[in-house]
Image 1 (cartoon, each protein chain N blue to C red):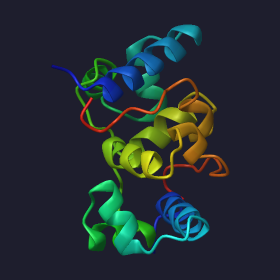
Image 2 (image 1 turned 180 degrees about the vertical axis):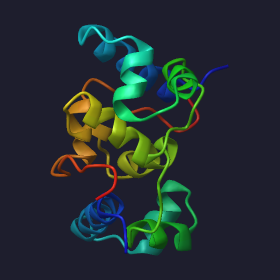
Image 3 (image 1 turned 90 degrees about the horizontal axis):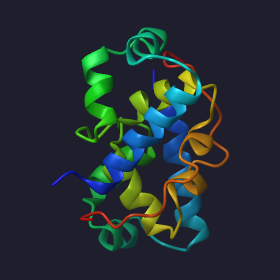
Image 4 (image 1 turned 30 degrees about the vertical axis):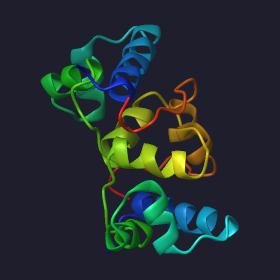
Length: 78
Length: 78
């Protein structure tokens, strides 16, 4: 079963990317991340690191706090 | 040279922990994290993962967005 927090963060990225009209390929290129890795983050398969979270937030011209808006508190094992 | 983002996040944890009047040992126990690992995060030595960031934010009864308040946008290689 996929991790709820990782899934919600992946969906947040997908929504922001769609709102910005960016394909996965163009956004991955923009932030210097491998496209297939970005794809795996978006489906919730990755326990993403702070540095990659920051790259992603920067890619949307957001602070980390702005990026995580709307992501609720989730207990670790949910 | 320590990574600026990791250092700022470490300081944020230290400040919140001090404000809550919690020792490193008691906060590590509270969130189920090894104390020495928490110590290494606080000095900016760790590229912390999403799950551990969530554990830490939860430990302060905060959402991730609340936890990252005050952390500015930092270019990846700063």
